[in-house]
Image 1: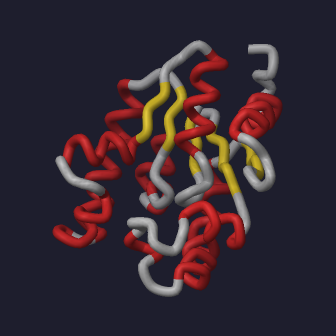
Image 2: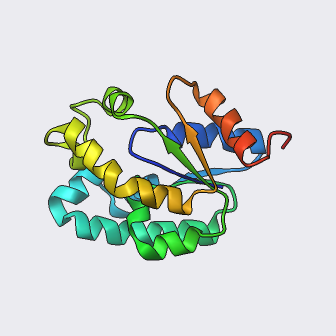
Length: 166
């Protein structure tokens, strides 16, 4: 199972709950990138730029899809890459979504999110206008995380994928 969606939507938290419920493992490509690069994502953006980060991200997703049989969370912008979208086509992909108010509340205005550094609300809306069609393109199911606990979201994901009794 692959979880996609914007930064701060809860892919990591929900993914860990899902992995536990399904008796499998969890992997987050953002964590893989940090481990490989030896620095935080915000530092990669500053030091090497977004294009370099996207290359690292593409490789992290390719490796994770090839190696990891459990629940996988992708970074918010991973779906921007056409090859990544093709790679996850046919997999059980769930788009976790939330609105801008919830996004700002969760990501915070001071969080180290390089793409939200200036005017976070407006920038988040712009990112979602660009990314929402791509998230929905790859998703088998769309699940809102608004006003739900991670456990409730996990239940909704399992229902949407008809895995409730798993």
